[in-house]
Image: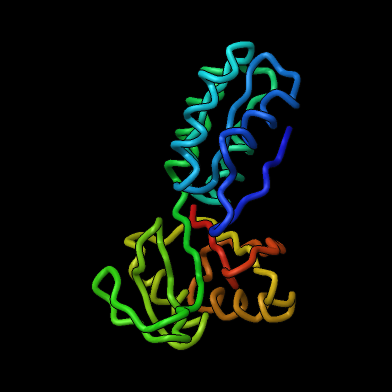
Length: 195
């Protein structure tokens, strides 16, 4: 396995991905972009590495990437693994909680600098003043209650603060299983995976 560093402001190049593919010394490689901005770049790698069968499972977020990895069968062939991973990521809703850096209007929402915003599968769906109320609003509008919510706490959130958020969420959603992990991500105090 190879990991290519990236992020919201630092997408990997074709060369970065190609180097990682070749460094695996494998006959076949599955790329998980984990960012919608990287999918098109990842799709170009196969043509540049004729010695390796390269496929892209179009993961758009960290939660989708983790779900895809959990669906991987190390003994399976390339096609069946890709199919299994794509099916698995179809059941994941990604919620990114961040803060507005300026006043704006997006997806029908009036946003002010400092507001807490929820980006659900690449769309701003909720705006508020604190993390808990914004996450609650997302869950209230989710359509159906998820069975599992995995909370990845960001670099600026300590373990106790994340646990307090989850304790509050459990009170209103007692039938949901919650997991909390240190994601360490920049720019997003919380990323949630709803499954």
